[in-house]
Each structure stands twice: as C-alpha cells, then as structure tokens.
Length: 194
Figure 1 (cartoon, rainbow, N blue to C red):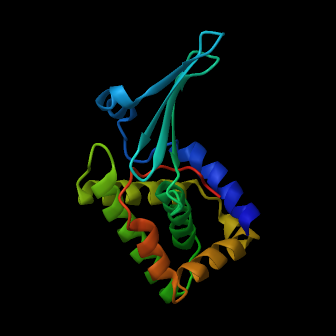
Figure 2 (figure 1 turned 45 degrees about the vertical axis):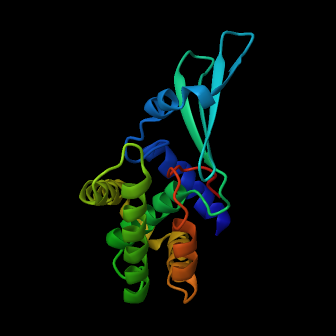
C-alpha cells in the first residue's frame, strides 16, 4: 500500500504542485528577513532557509535553470497536512468516479477529514483564507482529479489501496490521530510525504 500511496503522491504533487492554496512564500520570507539564512553557491545559485513555528522549514532558492523554487518541510512530527490532503482528495475523487469503492462509513470519515483539513488550511495558511474559499478549492481539486481518471481505474489494483486507506481513515482511533495531527498550528505544506 505504501508503494501505491507513494506513486499516488508523485502523481498528485505534479498535478497540484507544492501548494494547493496560494501560499505566499515570498511574502513569508520578506516578513522574516532577519531570520533568513542565505547560502551562495559557486555556480550563481543561492538558497535561503527559514524556520517557522511548528517547526516548518521553508527553503527558497534558484535552481540550475535559473528558476526560483519554494519548498516547505513539516518537521513537527505530526505529518505534512498538505500530503494527507492530497491523498484524501485522490481517495474522494476515486470514490466519486467508482461508485461503491468505499462504504458509507468510510465516506463519512473521509468527509470529516476533508472538513478538518479545510479548517486547518483556513486558519494556518499564509495568507489566511476564508473557510468557504478553501472548501471550494478542495472541491475543485476533487472534480479535476475525477475528470482525469480513466474508467479502467475502477477495476484496477489501485482500488484495493484506495479501500485500504479509506478503511484506515474510518478506524475507531483515526479521529483522535487526525485531531492530534491537525492540532498544532503550523504552515500547511506537502512535505515530507510518505
């Protein structure tokens, strides 16, 4: 299952990018300019690092092609909320695309997680977003992923993995784990992801 989820994350990260809701990484770096550690490299590249509460380590730099990149790494030990959200979006999209993939109890647990993640993003993203805007963004992401899916996915091996994830999410202790993961305030990022 881990192998499937890793592949799922690779696919969804390319679809969603580093950030689902327009985190202002440059604004964050500008607001904390005195805390930024900059490293110059011999080839003209540079990298800046900033540690935010959580802790979340942000990196901004220039790659070998001259493109500016941003990277967020959740070091809280509670998991990268963006990673969990990307996986949940794909599970919901698959469940919508393939009726009967998850039970009503699993669908309910998935919806509870998506709502909890919505609240977390609204509170902790920079800039903050209205809950309705985050909810709309998640729904758009689910619709986008559902439209991308081929009919054959409903009969494939991946359905078992989707069902496994939905089953784990619906387990009795899952809500406590979700509350613990979403409790400490921190910038929502997608890394590390499995």
